[in-house]
Structures are given as C-alpha cells and as structure tokens.
Length: 103
Figure (cartoon, rainbow, N blue to C red):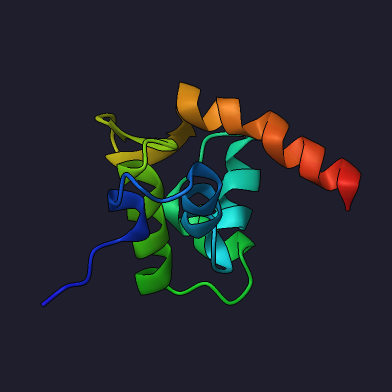
C-alpha cells in the first residue's frame, strides 16, 4: 500500500507543496544544475556528492512528474537522455533567487 503524496492533496498549501517537492538533498542540487545547462544522468552522478543511482532516479522522476523538468530522449548515437527545465521550472527560479537574497 502506498501513501498519497502531499502534492496530490489539493487542500495543501501551495508553498508547502513546493517545499515538499524540493525536500531532500538531491532535488535542490539538480534544480540548481538545471538552471545552468541540460542534465544527463551520469553527469549528475559525478557532480552531486553522495548521489547514488536509485536516489537520483527517484529525484529526477519526482521533478519530471511535477513538470519542473522535462525528459528528452536524444535519438542520436549513442542514444541518451537529457533533462531540461520546463517553463514551470523556469518560473520557479526567481523564487529561489529571492530566498538566496533573504538568507
């Protein structure tokens, strides 16, 4: 049996949903790296200290399902996947910039 995610509850405060989405170690770092360039799985594994395949895959899946990142399959040889910020993801950047000013 799985528990419902806080993001699934329409009565949850939007700020609480945003904070829950970016909770944990990997998601904020993934988001920061995504603001700079396209992301690839193995590159993230190397760049994020302490990341492992399973936790990285879960974090990428959560951010993709929340439509913050988009998963793009590049059908060139070698076949690979890139992750980029969506318009929704780009709209969150000013929020984090404001938080950085406060802290």
